[in-house]
Length: 360
Ligand SMILES: Cc1cc2nc3c(=O)[nH]c(=O)nc-3n(C[C@H](O)[C@H](O)[C@H](O)COP(=O)(O)O)c2cc1C
Image (cartoon, rainbow, N blue to C red; front, side, top):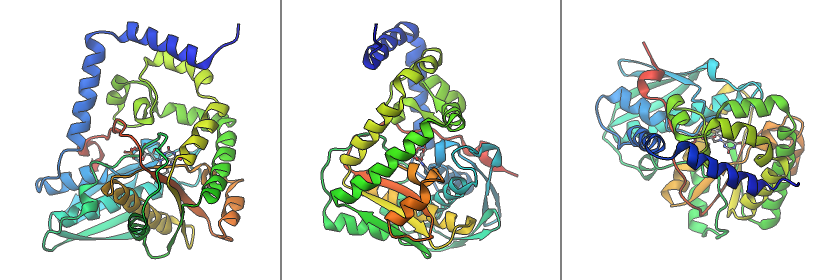
């Protein structure tokens, strides 16, 4: 008897309905929705530091590990890495971790500005020190987009994007010492897709990468709410299943061939791809990349567009130099790869409450 992936999934889904039918599943869904609402409620002026931290944590971050802590004293907020949440397999040199801190810093700067605080992040070793100075409040489309932004791992609708919107997306990435390569030609996108597929194959054959990835997967609402971090299945377009069903099923439904097809479809249906590359490869520059990529995601959201990261070509170290050469980057390290376009809304991912990430 041959095993059909869709049949397996359908059987599992049937089982899951039996296993989770009734109140417990409904309760888990409603507490998931409540958690989303709580973390993404509109920004309030007080308590200032808690609110700024809440908005900072809504930033994109690798595997949604939320690898940060915040400490606030007077008019200074410090963002520091939480190395207990690092991902040694996918991110052995903590590149993504520091990019994630840059994403959080950018959200904090934008949110502070709407509350009447000018914030200028300074990188000090591993930490980002942000001093707040009073200034007239300035609303902005990017700050408004903070609670709405999400990484949308779905097939887009293939629609092209007009020159004005492209220009705004390119502008959003402007950051000293960071270059943005924006591609909308099908041939260029397809070449990036080739690297994404090659990187994905390498990662899916790598046991350490796969076990780390699975450890951050949250297969259903109840597990996601219990952890308030990680990659929630429905936020990635997959069904919600009890973990005892999902885990053994993974090797049948989460295959190299299936994922490569998914990534090809995702890139073929995207309006464009942007690669960010800093002039140097160190923590300060990775943080700068984070600030630029967060603004890109917020600008896309403000324009009603969707985006997601497809970082396989920059995560697989053996592939990175070839990918850099294909983009004309020479010795520079390509830092992040994002695709964008028009697509559906998916459930939002969760964040731990500010109290859990604030120290002192
Ligand atoms: C440095 C960095 C690398 C990331 N790499 C990937 C990636 O390769 N694939 C992917 O699907 N998402 C990637 N993400 C997106 C995160 O998984 C996502 O931000 C996180 O799960 C939280 O979800 P949200 O952004 O929708 O709130 C990356 C994010 C950052 C900041």
